[in-house]
Amino acid sequence: MTTPPIKSRGPKPTKVDPDQILDAAQAVFAEEGLRAASLRAIARQAGCDPALIYYHFDSKETLFKALLDRRFPAVLHDVERLADPADVRPTALRLWEVLLIYHRHLKDDPGIRAMIRGEIVRGAEGLTHLIEKRVRPIVVHVSRIIEQGMARGDLRPDLPPLLTTFFLVKMQLEILDVLPAVLPHFTNLPPQEVLLTGMRSWFDLYWRGVALHPASPLPPLPDPTA
Amino acid sequence: MTTPPIKSRGPKPTKVDPDQILDAAQAVFAEEGLRAASLRAIARQAGCDPALIYYHFDSKETLFKALLDRRFPAVLHDVERLADPADVRPTALRLWEVLLIYHRHLKDDPGIRAMIRGEIVRGAEGLTHLIEKRVRPIVVHVSRIIEQGMARGDLRPDLPPLLTTFFLVKMQLEILDVLPAVLPHFTNLPPQEVLLTGMRSWFDLYWRGVALHPASPLPPLPDPTA
DNA sequence: CACATTATTCAACACTTGTTGAATTGGATC
DNA sequence: GATCCAATTCAACAAGTGTTGAATAATGTG
Image 1 (cartoon, chains in turn brown, red, yellow, orange):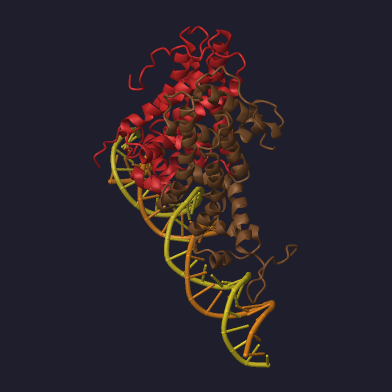
Image 2: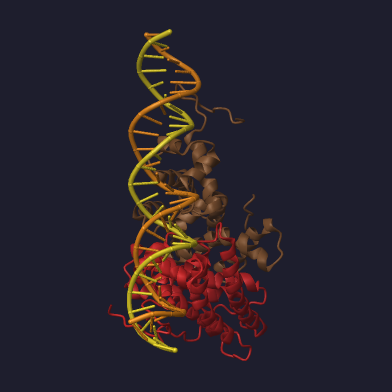
C-alpha cells in the first residue's frame, strides 16, 4: 500500500517482488526460528498469498537457498580480500577484521546464523550440503590468514589452522546469537554495548591464546561502527 | 517382547515405564532435532502408543522438563563439588575438569545440548525459563572457580568472570556438537580422536588466553576416558 | 476491442502435529 | 468368579503444514 511497485517488468504491476519475500522470510526466521517458520507466516509478513511464494520460488528449500545466496557472496568476498597475502597489516588486526566481517553481515540475520549453526540440518541432507558448500571456502580463507600469521612469526607455529579458525568464528557466531539475549540476565550492561564488550573480551582471550608473544600489546582495534 | 517388565507396581504389569519413554525421547531428539521430534516418533521408538506418553506426562513440555531433570542435577552436583574453595589443585586442572564434566554428562545427549543451545526457545517462553533456571547455577559455580583462580594468582586479574565462563563452556558444547560432524570433512582424524583433539586444542588456546603466565607449562590433563 | 502475458489469489489436497475421551487389557484382591 | 484399578490402546479432533491447479486481476500489444 505504502510501498510503490519498484520495477514492474511484466504486464501486471508487481506488488510483492521476490526480494520483499526474502525480507519477510528473514524477519520470520528471526522471530520464530527456522523450523517453525511457516510459509503462511512469511506470506503474511510479506503481505501476500502463500501461493505467490511458489510463483517466485520452487519450494521452501529454494527459498532457503535464495536466502543463503543473498548473504554469503558478500561475506566470502570480504574474507577473500582479507586473506590476500599482500595484506601486510598485523595479524591481530586482520583476525579482528574477521570478527567485524561476521558482525557486519550476520548481525541482523539470525535466520542465516541458524542455518550456519545447522539448526535445520537433520533430515534435510540437501541443505546441509548447500551450507557446507558456502561455509567451507570462508573457513579456508580464514585459515590461510592464520597460516600466514604463523609464517610471519606473529602466531605460535604449533597451531592447527582449521581448529584455530573454527574457534575464532564459531565463538563470534555464538556471541552474535546468544550474548544479547543472555548477558542482560547476569549484568546490567547497556544493550548496545553487550556485543562490543563480548567481542573485545573474546578477541583479547583468543589473541593471547594464539599469539607467539601473548604479552605483547594489541594494535588498536577499530569499532564495528567505524 | 524381549524386555521383561522390570517393576510392575500396579495391577497391570508395566510394559513401558516413564524412564523408557525418556530414553526414547532422548534418542529421537538426537536423530531428528528437537523441534521435529514428534510424540508419535517417540512413542514408536518406545514401542507404545502416543497416548501412553500422556498417561505418564502431562504434555510435551512436561516431557522436556523431565528430560532436563534427568540430566542437570548430576552436572550441577559435579560442578558444585569442583567449585569447592577447599579444592587447591591447579586452576588449569580444575578448568579442564569442567570440560570433562560436560563431556561425561552431555556427550551422548544431543537433545539436551540442543535445549541448552536454545534451539526450541522461540515461542516457548516457559521452556526458556526452565533452561535458564538450570543452567544459571552451573555457570555461577564455574565463574567461582575462575574468581578463585584470579585470587590465587593463577589467572589474569582483569578477566570478566561471567564472559570467561561463557567462552569456556559454550565452546565445549560446540565441540561436542559439531566437531564430530564437521572435522572429518576437512581432515582424516580417526573419529574417536576428534573430540579429544578438539578439546585439547581448545583448552590449550583457552588456558594461554586466561593464565597469568601463559608460557608456563600445563599440568598433565587426564583423558575423558580415565 | 480482443489477446497474450505476468502477477496474484482462492480453494482445496493430503499429511502431520499435540491432545483427549472412551474403551480395553490383565493382574491383584475380595 | 466378580470387582477394582492401573496400564494401555483406539479413534478421533482441531489446527497447522507444504503444495498445487484452476481462476482472476491488471497491464501492454495487436
